[in-house]
Length: 273
Image (cartoon, rainbow, N blue to C red; front, side):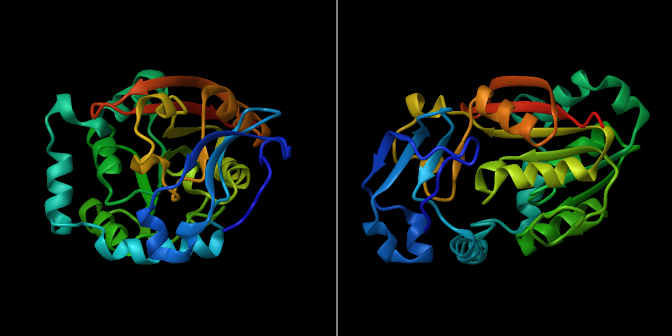
């Protein structure tokens, strides 16, 4: 694990939000000795950006996700998982809600068509729902869990790369890049956003969804969202400042309550030049 200062402003001033003295199931996958580390969620004393301190480094996260991937589908086959999620009724489908939210804010783009890349596309269920509502689009995905990537490629019949995302790995010139519940896992969120910006066409949009800091008031301290796989936590201000620093224009920021009762921060970011 590593000790860091704020990646948004560089300050080493930290305000403790929560102390974690319980066992974290994800740490057992990496090194059980990590359970003895003093773990905290902190807010930057200068800019209020929230992050884990200490947090997993690149080597730790690689070990974690290599081991976690062994149980990707739990008690379902890949196809059972895909069919269950993609056939949820309208009133239960979070993927449909995301696609309709995007369509309502980008009606001209939806009608015109283009290229979409889904980063961390999982088994392809979001892209499937997107294509059901925008069939003229070219779609591709990138997903580090091989079993998920293979499922998405097979069921979508579209290119899906079994890899971590990095700039240019899937090409460039995308009209929309989607990134659902991924940014909070990245080692360097600013570099990650800058890579995405470079892969967008001028005038293209990044659709991003992350957990919102209101979770700290709503969820119990041992909730999965607070465990070590999440490195950063965002609010509207910190996500907006990070986006601007990465070279985006912030078109929309919105706090949403999902159909499963979770609070997410959703943003639409535009590459202007």
